[in-house]
Length: 154
Image 1 (tube, rainbow, N blue to C red):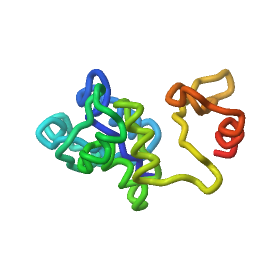
Image 2 (image 1 turned 120 degrees about the horizontal axis):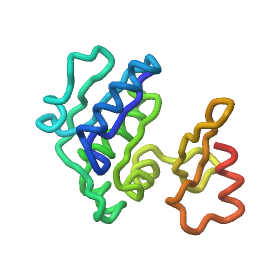
Image 3 (image 1 turned 180 degrees about the vertical axis):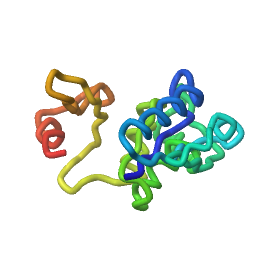
Image 4 (image 1 turned 90 degrees about the vertical axis):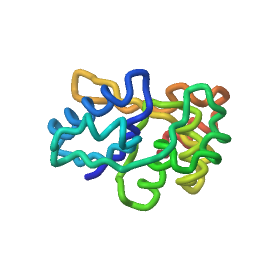
């Protein structure tokens, strides 16, 4: 399975993102496409067989307007991650970047599941018996009961 990872999103990107991706690839036996600026990411890559650099030329900052940034930065690391998933080149994608832009990319690039009005951010939480997966962990400020039912469908 291949997962796309936004190497440019987060407080300590790309260094910590690359480190975490390498650890996840080894621990879970998955392949990872690190999406990032080649000059920033390539020097951090060891010759790890499960890590692949997918170049991008743009980055969406934390202070940028989400939908505007996704529309005006089609080669951003977030937009490229969403496109890799839409094209079937990744089974999923993750980013520690601008959460509004992540939501916008999911809607504008990947589209919605039939019957689901909006995407939801998810989080994996460790439990005594493994892990639990939570949806709607903060990006939707006005979730309605119908939205909660749709999140349950996902």
